[in-house]
Figure 1 (cartoon, one colour):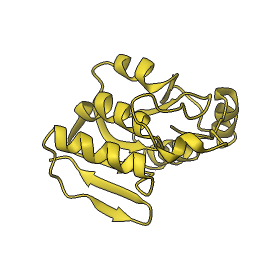
Figure 2: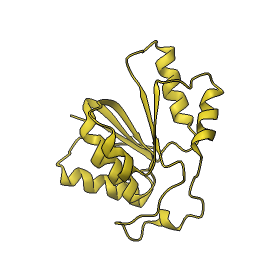
Figure 3: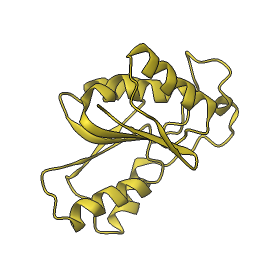
Length: 161
């Protein structure tokens, strides 16, 4: 998820600052808030009253304020299970997952991790949330991923070997 678009602004600004023209930023979010888990039971995120809703128009306005709203940002609106399977044959150098709940993190990994290039980086924004961490660990175990996880504050990352 991207909530209000802050990291999308940062990533697009980094592309501009470094004159990188051959890359895009993908911004996947429901733009309707965090969906409740279907497969995972007992994820504390399901009890949150705030579902972190930021409509697509609001996000686009935030990005436009910095002069960065252009076709180098590809918006992927909708729930991950419905939209991520259709991203196609993209290749990613960096994945930042800010998905909060078990189901959303799992769906992100299922559909996006195979598209991450070797040497690519996965950033898990919500490592401190039990559902998120469990989804990551279960996915890694199912796929034999042993790359070292490095933790910083409440985030984690690893480099795909």
